Length: 215
Image (cartoon, one colour):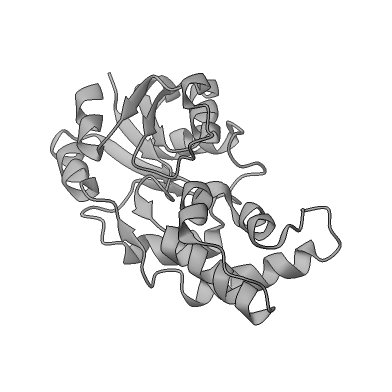
């Protein structure tokens, strides 16, 4: 029996692509580089700052200038992290149903705490999460199982009693390896090239309300 539903944040609970992409394009413009169309940004928006920097500049993490670009990108994002970010349609009604069934919910994200702590209170969740684990809460982030097990300890519920919902391969891998049931959020940031049929998802969902069918 599922006693808790844990979620990824970007691309699962919240549509953050416009703000993540906006920060990238403002940074590119300031450096005289062309903007990246949102159609290219959206499918990879939850892959993190390093991926977006590579998308816009071609600069890999190993490049000597990468650290500067990353710092400037994160500073740009901090100035507008919630300008256009909203919850996906159907999230709050689903969370309301979880509350009525007395099922806990929480967040396990790779987003750094400096942003998670600011963003989560602004999203308008109908009820606060029982736990929030950020990308730097533990020594490792997803696809490691460390944040998954940390969340379970915080809420006092065993992994086998948890469902993890996310929109990326690392989400499904982390959840499955931690001993959780997993569900893929098809409404999230999934690229056409992603081999989703190879991801260890127990279920694939087209809308948040379908989570209730898995409980």
